[in-house]
Image 1: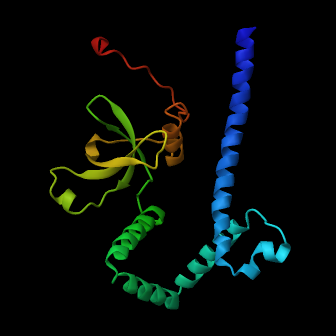
Image 2: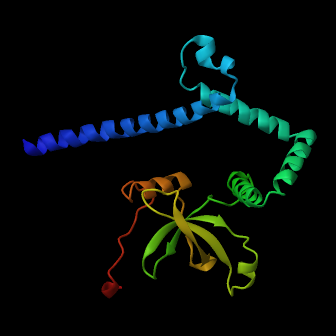
Image 3: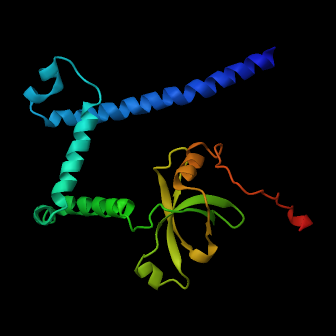
Length: 213
């Protein structure tokens, strides 16, 4: 009886917990996006025009702003305006460093031809025999590559359950194992503390103990 109740309780938690967490995350994102409505003049805001607040309009406004901005900077005139804007920011010491760093990271992550966060890797860390999941972030690392005896790549090792924090290490390419799982599956694996492992279509042979090898 107790085992059956426990089983039903766990089944209920499995159904409702993802729904509740998803709801609150979406709600938080919508509320954050709704702050973009503050960019509009007070008389143009939904509360003034409709008499009540419409959740989600901030997200629509943010998408419109991003689309229009991309449309403008895609032509010659827009690129010249951006160049003038960046030249002005380049004269402000602290702002220059922050802006250039963020822009370079965004171009690397979102660029179509980049290799950042395109591969999930296995590396032996923090010592030989212990494997850690990592993500490839870059390969062309200039001076570091020039002064190492073997080809190295930059990998990001995320912390769990929060994959937005972590640290980077430089690993010889020959010591890296590339995985077939997608970056999304890799992030799920990290965020779930290793509980949610992606399915592997091929049979896996159990590893033999060292003494039996």
